[in-house]
Image (cartoon, rainbow, N blue to C red; front, top):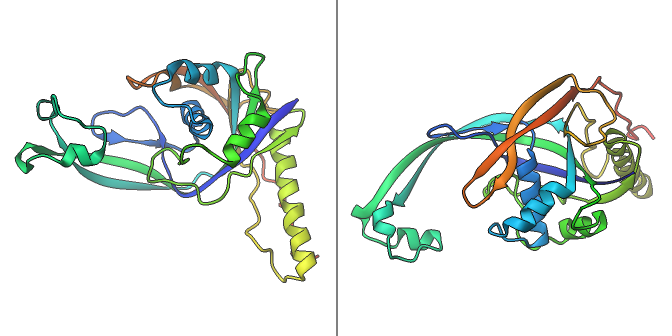
Length: 261
């Protein structure tokens, strides 16, 4: 079975949970809607193209391997925005348009926003029979994305290339292990060729937790199954539905290394 594997790393990430009032939380793993948005951005699909976004939702299954969930960072956020009456019959296609009006027509809104610091995740994509793009096409788009990619919010760019690879494996978990082994072998080869005393890049960590949706061949039995409201229904109105998310804590594994080689 073929899987598209890629990595997500960044100093900040925000994987949205249902927003209640002025609080904007963040889950510890990217949800289905975030991954669909990432693929759509890479392919150049506009947010308003609901048919194309729905095709991505129905055409693929996802699994996320957590290497480092990141530490929680909570931000007290203030912003100036005009009221709806002030915006009526005025262009407001950009943030500059919103603020280009008399100061007395601007309001201050307050919110609390959560982020994950220094997180690292791996994503496996499994195509269904009705998938609108091949996994190779998705990999090419992630390698050279049409729109700028970010980890949940525009203020959270990736800190490293996504390094997409299409791999054959019996399960998502095994594909993650094969992907990590391939990266480590490349690092060791660079170390040996240049006679380095240390690896040229930090060695990637093992998968400590696996999260996946129904229909994905995960390769492990879930230890917890719970609903998560991140199934994209209608992006224009920010409408999301429930789906079942399966999770499994993985036993610690000895990390392969070539430091002493």
